[in-house]
Image (cartoon, rainbow, N blue to C red):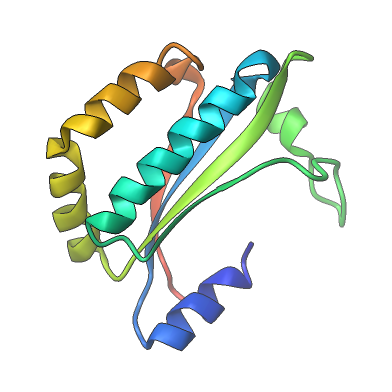
Length: 132
């Protein structure tokens, strides 16, 4: 994941601001969750986001002296961990785009769908500015 930032920002000649979300998704809801994520990504990009990606688990085991995701984010046997990454040119760009996204009636419909698919109180989120 870390190598993504230099590639994106370097090729575009801009700084990078991103929002990152970790989702615990019940296995029975994965297909519907990914459908909502895809539709949401289209809205983000339509309104100016550089990219909006959702990633699924491949290897969550501890490695290189680090702890594993399941040690830090409790994932039940009937859940999978996903994360999404929304990329913007800058914090200002992010704020302007999110103001447009938040007004989109389709986002409200998608939000209402996703809140029935996952427990939003267990979503971990943050915003980050590229430093290096």
